[in-house]
Image (cartoon, rainbow, N blue to C red; front, side, top):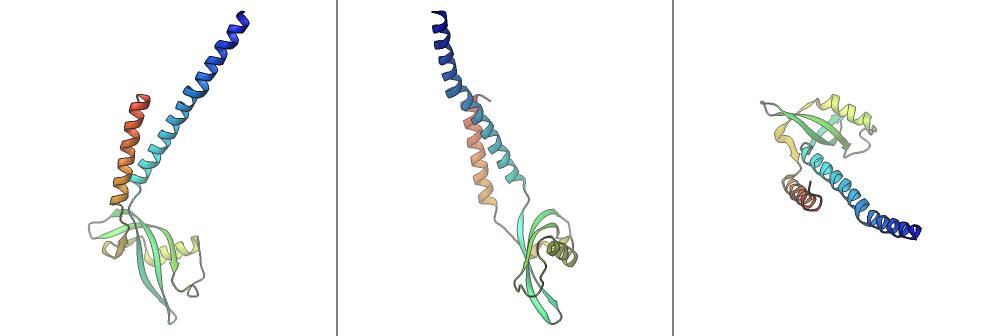
Length: 146
């Protein structure tokens, strides 16, 4: 009889652990990961496009560079990190990837004029992320008591 009740109690405890305790632990981990990703998205700097015309040996092409803002000087220049670059005329230069980014770094320098960069609109995106993070915080407080 003791063996029978041991199996019944074990089955009930296994059911409770498998369907209630372990899924809540996974959900807590997932909520924490989502919070971390949301905070990282809010902390990333402004990004934008810088366009210029490059001329060499009577050939020219428009250079489009995606940049990330690192700092702004008092004189109106922006220290940037180059994320990607491409020429509108692909025959103008054949470099790609890191070699092209190094060439752009040498060509344009570390600082670009603030007014010539077309910044991506991030205010609406940031507001949506803030609302989402608030919802996650409210959910986790109500659900888990943390």
